[in-house]
Length: 195
Image 1 (tube, helix red, strand yellow):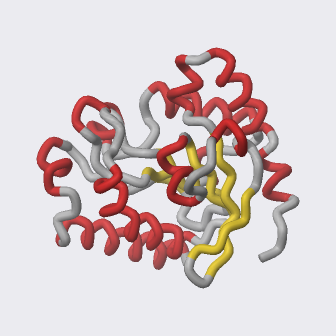
Image 2 (cartoon, rainbow, N blue to C red):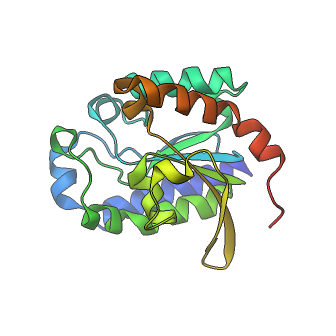
């Protein structure tokens, strides 16, 4: 099955290139950063957009925030090879600025198609940009670490908003909150409401 999913994800990547999604971003980026990990994963992590290291390597979460993410996965008894990691926006915004609402909107159909292909049990949003799409109008400080079941098209989706690892690297109090939330992830997945 995973070969088939890999082929579908490759087709999706080709569609982004063929459809010239966010040409302004594409012009300043080195790589289109689709995602990385297990295409049969139960968990998909979604960040906002690639940074400098991610753009250079063509992989999500490989810089300082990615190292922190890997550490937290290990602490929670998980491995990066068991999960799938992606971003809403697949090109690095210049100077690591926040992706614009228009850029997020342009990439959204491709993100949703990624989720449709992978069929995770849970989506973990990293930071407010990715959370806002699934849980609009909610503050991350009110819902971090909680499972929220939402309707997405004809499917139900379990979403767990977490703080972004990059934010936690610069804010000590957030760091412990994020680690604590992260350590609860395996139990959350065990106890997910049946859709």
